[in-house]
Image (cartoon, rainbow, N blue to C red; front, side, top):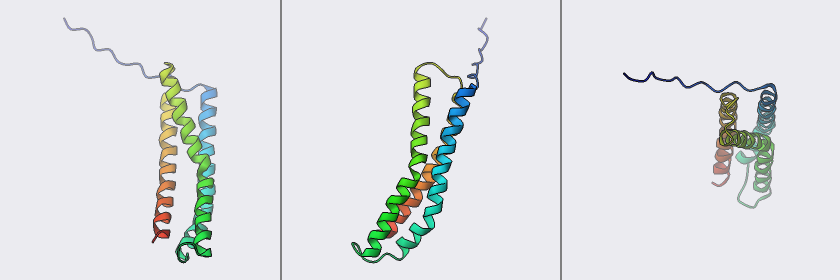
Length: 128
């Protein structure tokens, strides 16, 4: 007679401390997105009106691209912290809260990927 198929038990949900940590990291990423989005129109205009390489307007556009990188830093830091937390928990066998961590990781990854696409587009336009 065949053995019954065992259903894998889903990991336990995140406890209150982990929920707070996740919420804090998502909030940090969203704060970075807010700062990035606020600066993006100015950077886009600067790139659109930039003159030849090494001109004052080109340098100003480069500075705004650097400012965009700085503005998004909380988002990328939050993603890194989420990735690290997931790895530590999985490597340590603590799977409680993994579903919530992975959902937050996906949400923040989408945010940072969008920021990166915007930056890449601006850099491409500026290098022409």
